[in-house]
Length: 133
Image 1: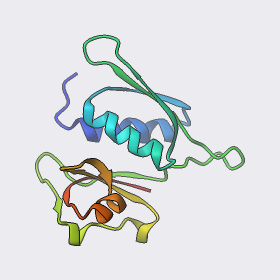
Image 2 (image 1 turned 30 degrees about the horizontal axis):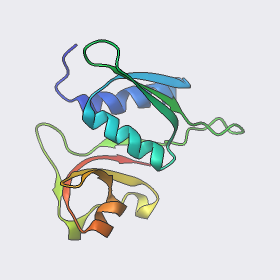
Image 3 (image 1 turned 120 degrees about the vertical axis):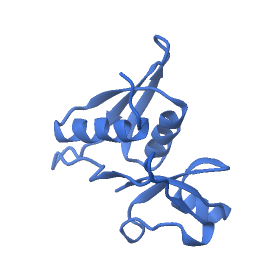
């Protein structure tokens, strides 16, 4: 299946798995999706991940994180910021803050795919891919 916006497809698959209370979600792999997955893991939004190189494209298996008592997900919402038809770029001085610093914005910069907080410390701007909180 050919998608015009693979990052939006990635976020939608995670969003659907959370609403269906699935523990693991399979997503077709790409380098950008792998980097976003690493950022989600480093910031504690997912429990674990595994890259599988089966077939021509490969898969990403993501184990979602849920609170054992309340059964709520660690991810409340994922939103796509920059779209193929309308890209959103931000300078280092005007990086977005998600929920007043409680969430993260994932950016594609010259230093790689990083969060808004890391971009502020490195003083770099870039394309705002998505918001996660």
